[in-house]
Image 1 (cartoon, rainbow, N blue to C red):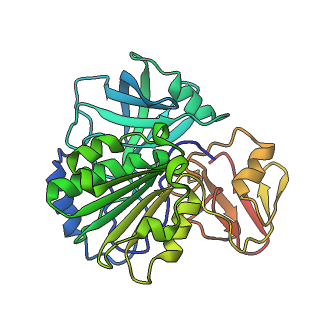
Image 2: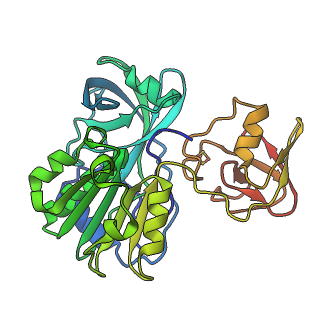
Length: 349
Ligand code: FES
């Protein structure tokens, strides 16, 4: 699992609008454009943004002991593409490792992208991110948006720890648009809860910062306490938090989520991945093809582990798959599973 913040599936309600990125956007424009797409009824896959940006680390701050907040500025004269709340970028680290991080700064500021990264013990990506210093140049891909902010009469935002990063621009957008909102931010302790103190300045009575060491681990009922049935609920945090909210919300209430880790495998069946020109790989019921293949071929790249980034997509030579968002003739090793026992893939992509 990547320690990066990983946009994922989870919306049970409408209106995606993949980040088109290239135009300057004000916060108000972002919300207004979201309104225009509100009629969409089903979540569409994230549109791949085939765009590479060269940026330079301009500043590194430590809002929490284990969180690095980085300002990334264009390495050239061109301003950065615009983005919308919920967007993320793929960061190509000097080692070649790719990780995804939500943009947590101001969408209308095209002079800088801001990301915040929690250091995870043993996490190669976060360790490398924390070692970055001003002046280092990086390649980014995107921005893309798998967690768009849809129009709603009011919002409840719930963030677990570093899950505040995509939520923070949403809060500011809702506030700027005059839409009522509340934010609940949880974490181990106050020292592990970045960004929300600045949001509390906007409207102190709308922000509940709830450290577990003081208030205990919250139940879904506590997180949702006082939530209006019309509210759109946006949650970014660990899978148990997301699942508990999903189960607790009444049917029909709009719920959008972004998780830190891959979705659990439900009702998985074992199958075989036959690597063209290579060995057969047995995929157990509780593992992904990506994990099984990487046990033999650790060079196979991945990033999101949720099917949408395209990093692990390979050519599907034979067989069919289920739960697979990759296009025709391809399979996403991280989520696709063979329909009938065996698939043949070409790792040469
Ligand atoms: S790792 Fe992103 S699509 Fe598989």
